Length: 117
Image 1 (cartoon, rainbow, N blue to C red):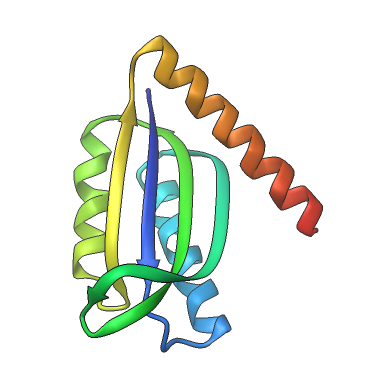
Image 2: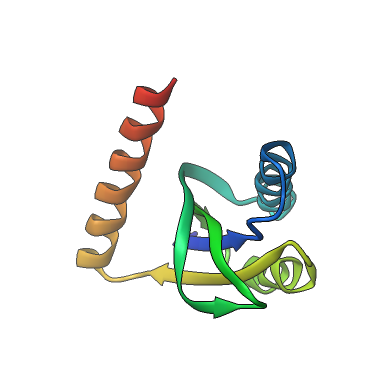
């Protein structure tokens, strides 16, 4: 299993409940694809670098997980067809230094999550 990070941006016009539902939907897709969710970093509402679909802001979320390479196509397909997600990016970590950085990012995301709880 490889280490992956997927960042996606949800439309800013949605309510908090709808945004939470979109994040849960992505987690369910990961579970369905037998991916192991390691950490989640909910970055909140942020300004976009450039307008996307006439939106200047978006709700950023990063999911860190381990999955088979074949499941990434299905995960990205679901991101593409979801109207409420305006941008996404998936990154694969394969080299030793990259995996070490991946582990640092997951630890930081888990610490941030535990402080919020």
